[in-house]
Image (cartoon, rainbow, N blue to C red; front, side, top):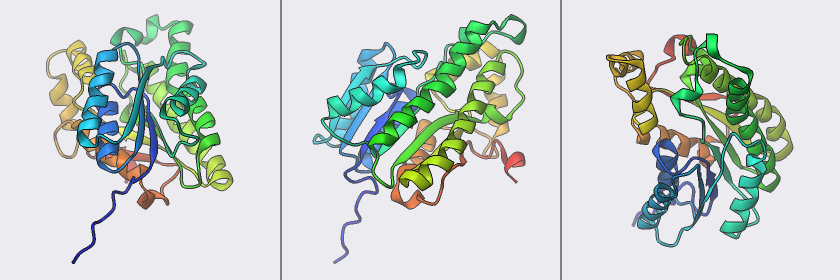
Length: 269
């Protein structure tokens, strides 16, 4: 008789920021299906959406310990607060997987270059680079060997998109750099991998709002960038994140792991 194949994330403790909706919610639920026993998510303001995600996790496995709490990536102290609160509410002394997914997604946060002021610049760099850096720095203190730090980035970090996405692209490029450099520190010192995930256009509420602001034909244009000639689904990205979080991905670190349907194929060849 064939033995049951164990879930790849069996027994793992995971934290997913921005886990109330979209890609973050998809990641949290995929972690549940892959065996995580403790999952913490953060949200900005939509508490109801966060608890809907927790309900979905419990439907997958009612024994999973879950929690949700508010955090704002624009707060310079957010990274430290998230780690402390997750450990407290989950009742654990360690974190196996830290996923930094929360980001500023409101289109009015991305003015055209001619109107970009220092405060807007600072807000995005705090959200996209500083907070993920602090999350990683704090989480690694509680990570056993084999821990995973995963930062959700974007194909925008390597593309010339122009207005109004300049500051967004700058933030994601900084995030990729954070991942690469922390990987050189945390691998030898802690046995922890650090990667960013190069996410392409993916069907979420945030993407739909962005496409609406860009005007007619934007969704078709985004789909044309992929070799698959479609935009991604949340599950496409969540499955890749779950693999990078798994023991099978222990030899992947310091990389911008593609989750974009070949959107950057020219650059990756």
